[in-house]
Image 1 (cartoon, rainbow, N blue to C red):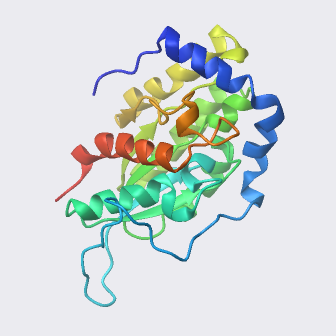
Image 2: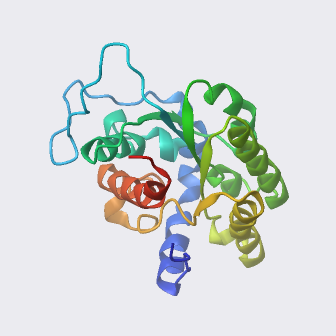
Length: 241
């Protein structure tokens, strides 16, 4: 995988994005209290493929999408969240997995660490850990971020699951030293624990107004589709046909 490199253009866009966080930070932190808008109408378009037929009662091995509001699909329909789009991508390509959306809006890595054992119930083969955005927003210590991520990775591997660790970025306003240390945590955990790393979950989406909702934080449906494609690109080498 090509290493993610921060560019001046991206830094400027991300800085502009986080400059809006003062009025909208509460949205991210309390988003878990807002109900998801689920449509009764099935989505249309090329990503709305029908899942392969299965025998009654048959179950599929699971991919656990474990994260915060970016995973939960805050502000968009559940069917438009990146795990739902990822499910359709897998179905279209003949991969027989069930994607379980275990995103909780406002979640920090500490919260994820507390609930991951329960989330790992069932035949979970792969876990996509995409947490840390709220840690960065709150300026929590990168050392705590590292300990929590390590604990979640260890819990998943103890259950025999593979792990894809999705990196996050801290707001540039936190200062160069903090943002650099924050970013390096994901690389260190992936290397030390021997798991796959997706350097930045929102690569190509963060800071792009046309791919985000009005809060400039959460992807809109088109942004969520791009996140799903990014995750799929990192995930596919881990899948069994």
